[in-house]
Image 1: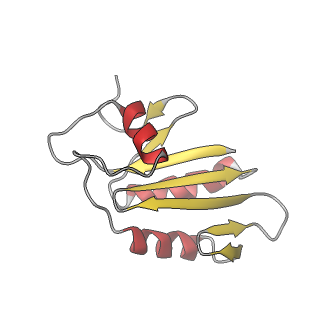
Image 2: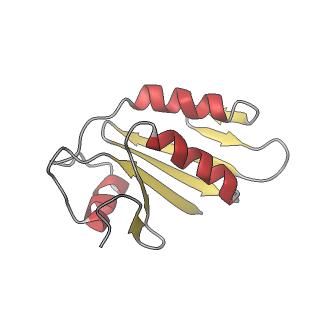
Image 3: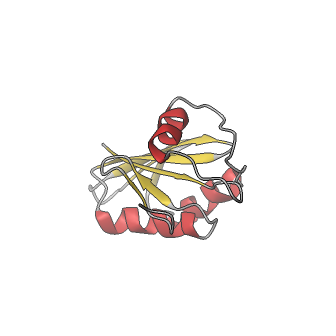
Length: 118
């Protein structure tokens, strides 16, 4: 499994990305993060992956055999668990989230892809 995690900081707030990730992974609400339009985001992702089979409310599988993903939401975050998903497909997910000013945090690296990187 490869995790992709997205959130948006409130203006002027900058927190430890990994601690934010850990709180998101536990489904917590975090002071300093903005609420994001998760329903619209899921609809946008569903549109981008409309050729994939929808397995349940928040899971999709590639009918051509390669990959699956599951979306986990809070009102402040989107966490996408990818199973055998190709890099180009994960890039599509990241581009959708950029439309909502939610940069990618890659906990495997760990690295957040925004202008505040150390």
